[in-house]
Image (cartoon, rainbow, N blue to C red; front, side, top):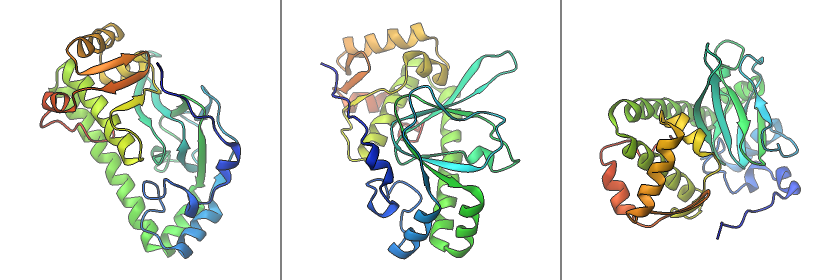
Length: 249
């Protein structure tokens, strides 16, 4: 039976940084109450984005970073041939928009996979705060460093791993990220489609479907549409030993 979906409480988007349950994952991590209040004053909170709605598109003038409070996003770019290339998935407590800080325009697009509440932080106001708040500046550096580490892990995954190892590493990454949010590391819903997973991992959708069926047949997973239950975490880990399976893939 599919996991129960939680409805978005529109009032929850008004919650301040200090009261947010994702504080330890987002930019306010390690900040004291006074500094957190200063950050909270520059945050713009909007009505929830609906599935399929763009937060920004490649080429749009860059203006802000965006922190996800609930829901999930997909980042992607379009190749010269017009094909979509999935770059990653953003979960609650994570940030998108860093690729727009270099030359005044976003290099990729970000679209919602499900209803999402998002906090917008304008670049200029954020830059001013970073100069006066050392804790925020350190956290920004940590976020950028994590993005670089993620990119390196993805290159390693695609270049050196089999199809089975790629999917196993992806699922373990999601498991770890959900666990850090106080959710189950064994039972979770995939906000993205099989096609998106295949695109991201460099696999055909038929291969992804076949691997899910194989993992279920061999007792690694229980799969019910988008609901995943990891039945044998140890065996799944052994498949990707030495791989960056816990990074933000």
